[in-house]
Length: 404
Ligand SMILES: *Cc1c(COP(=O)(O)O)cnc(C)c1O
Image (cartoon, protein in one colour):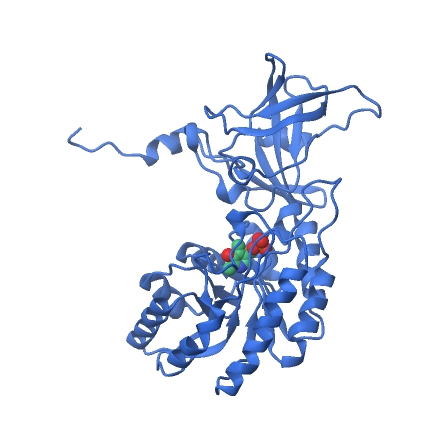
């Protein structure tokens, strides 16, 4: 890590190719015996190299925008392995995916269904769809990432979706292939999944009685990861796979899942260095060169990330407690409060663990800080998979009007 820091400069993200591979295979194996496709939710980590690695392993991709669709295709993932989610797909995005090839649209509302039908008809195509149903279950996760309660903006209420399916079946531009559900992110219990999938199984039978050929079930993503080593472990992919087998396995459907965080989260860290140790009144601050613009999860979701020195201190080394902050001019630019850390010197490297998901993808250039670079390691080699922009690049992106 010290070598990479010397070559790239801090802060930077680094992802392990081996861990990404292992996590994808855990899901793939968890669904063994059922026809299935594991679609990586690329909103968690959309670097082209990450997509290429997973695509080459046979992964599908869950995209939520036209930009993500283009990126997945640019990484070599064929359209028939791409599912398109999201509540606000524009007609332009629909056209892009229909023309380029798409496995299925996960449709989230009736107006979206009408629009997709129109666009498909105008192209002389039929759009394969699943309706995203909102099962009204409590995912028991952070409110900002719960999506399966009736008050959330996502999906069509499960109680009224039979009517929506009946309408969809009459549309010449629409081919109903299945049902989609996604109840939230960072779930640490299996019970909400079990509840939701059971409702999907009942719905499958009801819709088949209505004459629909339900042949595919997209069960979403959301399985959580341990952000604190000391905490209880969330369920394993194999246990999650067992819930799927038990709840919907008898239906003979092809199963799709859309894990993001569990594949990319613990495959990445954010490496930063200490700028200053500042003694404040009653508290000491570690001021790092990473900030909320590089990793927004702590300020946005009150998320915990373990932060550890890159060079492990000797056993029994002295510790102190610190507030760990970045240089951005916001009080919210705080990564941790009262965190016990070994004594550090200026320039020492620290690593934020579990930073591979919803890290670099949410980074910004707030405070005109260059977008944080990304690195991939594989065995003893590493490569910069997104360089840090130069200040000239950043400045030249803006243009001054001629009349100014
Ligand atoms: C965010 C999202 C996912 C991935 O969630 P994770 O918690 O990262 O597994 C999957 N599907 C949809 C529709 C999403 O919005």
